[in-house]
Image (spheres, rainbow, N blue to C red):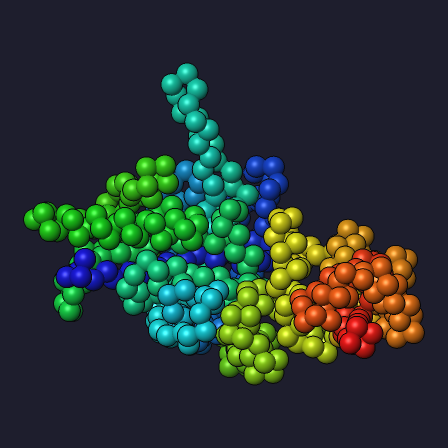
Length: 489
């Protein structure tokens, strides 16, 4: 392995989150009955003319700008000709020689990404982006297993015409882990922009990999092989690991490689040959005659740029600088834009950013993960969680009582103040009220008093525990310790 180097490029298709398709008014809603969101345009019927969706263009521009691409003032849609049962037009409308955007880059962090436990600064690597271009999606072929030894196949054209962007990387990726990190960063940015939900199970994010190997230090690339069916981040990494090993083994045995497309078989954990890889000329690209060229003015580009949100890496840096968070905490809290927004609201309400970070990424995310929910489904609002953390800081309740209050907030959606009042959970910080409890516990524990006065300091925990038990955990711990030392000495 040390004598060989992998060269990897990724082609990522991102479904844009528009309400209608790219060239017609049909809905893009997922899960509707088959072949119901269709019209003459997306069915490819003769005489039907496409109309470009402006919202799709602006979402594509947002993605391209966030990926540091140059928006081309002039771009053109083209017909990519091939036959497949779920492509009723007989061609896909895409972009070829004149794409929407080019020459971008994405910075990828070190091997463990944003969730690494180490505080070691991440190593940054720049992955170049060849292009970002628009295209429409094909339909979906559904294979229904076997019946009487004959395979049944169906075509659902609801997805036909759904707007996509294809993001093509330069061949700058050198390992399966880098590919994993690149795709993770790409998904994170798309989610922050709100241009896609990136749901791989629904096909909103799809990835193909081009991979070759060459002797380490060589300038010329090896034979490029495309790997498809990479419908999870884990499968991407596994498929690349297998394919790199397969290519190296073939070359070391004196064999040769042929440019081809292979599929990742998840059951067998290996790639399988699918077809000989096509070249660009096989698709007979030519400009789409039914659509005008796409002209992006400088004013339009600047208007779209002005609407970009704060991107994940910038937000992580601000969280570290503004709130004093550790790199790990900032990484966790910026995994998604809704989570980052939620945290900032909690921190603003309670006035203690670090305590807010602990509660959000610990108690709240732990409860949500256990329930299979994300932050947008939380029954505890950011305002209410912020109020709970503030009450702890003010000494109104103890940290232990706060856990109880939080559980009730999760279950019922009540405010912390309502729960504390209804359950009588307010912390007792009145010295005169606690004096009586302390005196009673000391009087009932002569043996422990004798042990403490003989120098056994750890007995103090026994008294604290008894007082907490008597007050149902509501006694102010600092005041309890102060009173105990006063009466025991």
